[in-house]
Image (tube, rainbow, N blue to C red; front, side):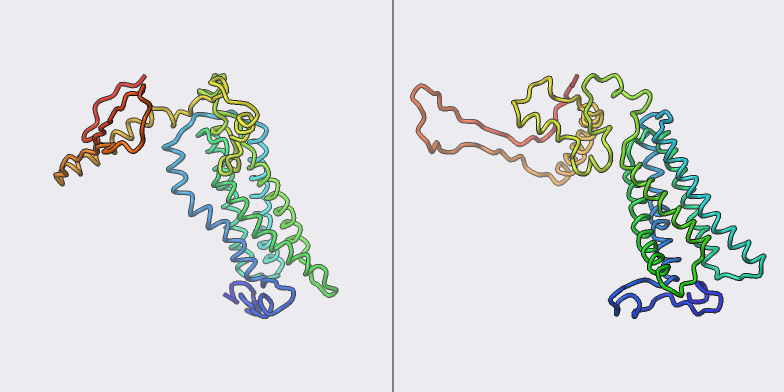
Length: 309
């Protein structure tokens, strides 16, 4: 790994005295140029096959290009150019007989391809009707956290009186850091609804489907109704329309399928029919004007066909 990070093999990958046994901890340049650069890349490439299949199976409709989507795409493209600038700068140095370690070629290449993939996913999500993406938001969070560590290290190194600064690579990194921060902020906002979505013509749509990923995981989208219900009793007109995935048209077929599967299992095991009788005894005295009724409840053995509107 030392020969991968430095041309003469002098750069160590890990130094405990620099990271642990010190009052001002820091990581080695080798660790920064490999692990901290590759972590967000590994995350996105690991999620890619699963997320791509999910998007293909859950097509919500086409979203028109918006200013938010254009900005995210443009920033992703500039991030790709910044990574490629580092790569071609390494090639230029080699042409000037300035030999750099392989990490200065490999890491910008991996990061540049990953940024190109992120830009592609931004557009593919728009085509599939994704208004807010948790996968991409987490990617930008991880990328920013890793970049913060590198940013701190570069600042500490620049403050040293005898520091040797790589002006070009430091400049491209500061641009990269700033753009990742902006991309994270933009990813926290939801895009417009799909063009032919039912929510467009719904007079009272549920805000969950159009809320951002952060709003969904914190349930912030329901806060307005909670405040309204605290101030006064809710009425039927205050309730939102059900989301498509919450309607009986979507829920009942899945329930019936799993119910039938469990019923066939129980039938194969020849489970006897059990009756639950309640109540056995009347524990309280009731008013003489009230009728004392006993209710018998039987466990459902096989579901009857239902017709729902």
